Length: 219
Length: 259
Image (tube, rainbow over all chains, first blue to last red; front, side, top):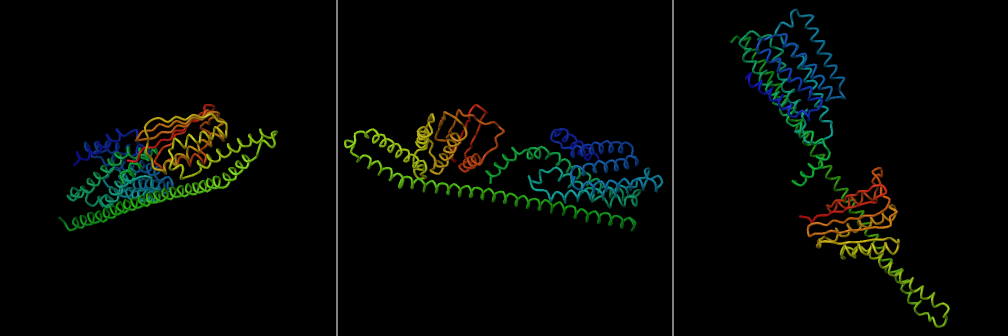
């Protein structure tokens, strides 16, 4: 499963590189997140290290915060508040729990997941208010947020309760939850990078007019 | 497996499934909602387009009705009065007053010109006449009238094989050409106006060119230009306007036969 996971991340990176001229700023942030994820996964595969896990989760939260500031400009204060909460939680855990960074505990991860799910809801709220310009299937942010909603909401309980089964045989069974949703996240990322070209073309008014005409003709 | 482990397993799996269900429901609902929104927006746009089309159609019908009435009035009233005046003038015996012979002759010629011009104007305004007559003939008459009335130099060429078009299309094309001619008279300060028609059984292209002052890109589209564009859209044709300051204006109308 690890190889499948890494292959999927590599595929996302290759696709993003191929579509680089269609990538807007927000997708460039996601691209950086994916590269960091790949590096961390490889390091952790070679030598499991709780420091890397904590550092990765925190960096991911910061980068996704930037991503949500970019796509939900009207609600940027709420996104920044979420970021503030994430930083406060991380500091609180480091200062109050001795050796927290050396432990495999993922309570910070669970809280970060709640914050990200909150950002996803903000995005969806904005999305349904936005006027329609083209089909949602060509909206890369929609697909990215589908991946975020599935992965970050469905792994909250897993990460929150992980310290209860960390050194036990249950860990092996339940880790499939994390792996499966991680795979689904990168599948959604793959879809998002795939539709960037069509999205860029549809954002061009001349192409849109042509596309509408052909749609009318087909109708 | 211990009962505690089983409890943890059930809690984690159960909780994850509930969250998964909610996440999938949210995604599904958003997809459905956006699709409905899109369908609604498309429906609105279609209704708006239909409304604009009907409005334009009504405007055209009203204009044509006015033209038709005007044409009839010119022909039946003023035309009759002029004809009667001409008849009266011809009854004057110039032998009784030989010193007025030249005046009487001049008046007769003037009345003749007035009757002919009036007949031409009446024809260009008459909707049914334009619909029935060949487009090239109507254009030629319009240009001749311009030459008489406005002292314009005009030229007209008609090449190619006949393009069979419905009467409504003929009327719309003629009205657009009339609008172009009016614009040349009113704004272009031109001395020469040329119209070239190239037709084939599949398509028709009409080029209107003047040697007037032209206009640059800084001139905004007026109501007349929008009307011309909309009328061309109604007959699924295209209009292309290009002009440069001091170099005249070129307009190309193009229609293709409906498949």
